[in-house]
Amino acid sequence: MNDEQTWNSPAVAALRADLALALRAAAHHALGEGVCNHFSVALPGNAEQFLLNPRGLAWSEVQAGDIVLVDAGGGKLAGRHEVEPTAMFIHAAVHGIARKACVLHTHMPYSTALTLTQGRALDTTLSQNAMRFHGRVAIDANYNGLALDAGEGERIAGAMQGADIVFLGNHGVIVCGQRIDYAYDDLYYLERACMVQVLAQSTGQKLMPVDEALTARVAQQANGERLQSELFFASLRGTLR
Image (cartoon, rainbow, N blue to C red):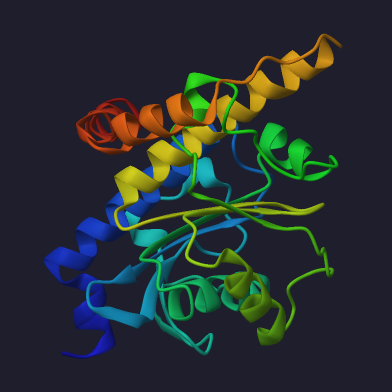
C-alpha cells in the first residue's frame, strides 16, 4: 500500500476525522492559540508515521481532508498542506522515544500560566479534576527556546520519563494518550483543573490539599473507567461540524 492509499484507507480516514474533530473541539473550548500548536496521532502499529494538523489553518476550520500524513524525519507523505517545523521536532520525538500514540501540544492559558510559577505544574492534590492526573505528570522545567532541532524534541521526550502529561516550563503542556478521545478528554479536564487552581490561588487564601492516600484513590477511580471520555468525544462529534 502506497502513502496515498494509506491516507485514504478506512482506518486512517477515521483517525483523520477524529484528529480534526479534536482540533475543532479545542478551538471551541478556547484551548488553541492562533494557528500554532499541534495535535498528532501515530498510525496503528507504526510510530514512524503519524497524522498531524496542517500549517496555517485555524483549528476551528480543520476537517479530515486537511490532515497531513508525515514520517518521523519530517517528510510529508500525503495531504495537500505543509507542516510546521517545530511540530515535527516535538511530535516525532514524543511518538518515537516516549512511544505515545496520540500527542496533543498546546499553550492553553491556565495550564501554561502554571508553567510560569515556582511549582511549574498542576497540584494534583487540590481539586477533584486535578486528582485524575495524580502520578501521571512530569515537569520539564528547563525552557530552552523554540524547538527548532531534533535535539530539543528528544530532550522534551526524555523529560517525560513515561508520564502521560508534561508541563513545559515557560512554554505549555503536552498531553498524550493511546486514543484520541481519551487524550482529548484529559486535555480538556487538565485545563479545567489548572483554571480552578489559578482562580483559587488568586484569592490569596491558603489552599487546602487532600491527603495522598485519598488523592491516589480518586485517581484510580477516575482512570479505571473511561466510558465518560468516550461519551464526551461522541457528544462533540454530534455537535461540532
